[in-house]
Length: 72
Image (cartoon, rainbow, N blue to C red; front, top):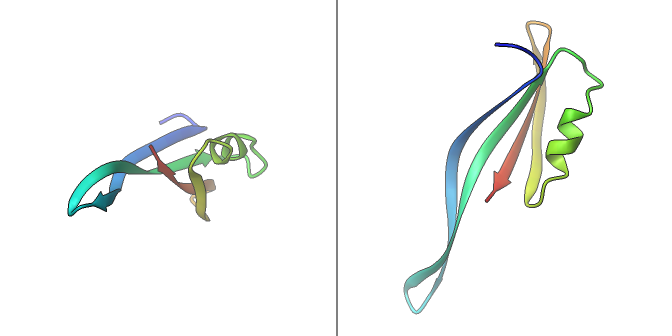
């Protein structure tokens, strides 16, 4: 893997109901930005996407991981 990189996976969905029927579904993805640079602007760009929330940050093996939840 080359850094910086973005990993994503489907992590759930939201459904809105009316009259006991789902009428709106939104898919949820977990998006992780991995970079060696702790001051990278890539996490800021991901966080600026609509319907995106920052979840957590952690460092492992000299890499910074920024985890976001994105609804699409």
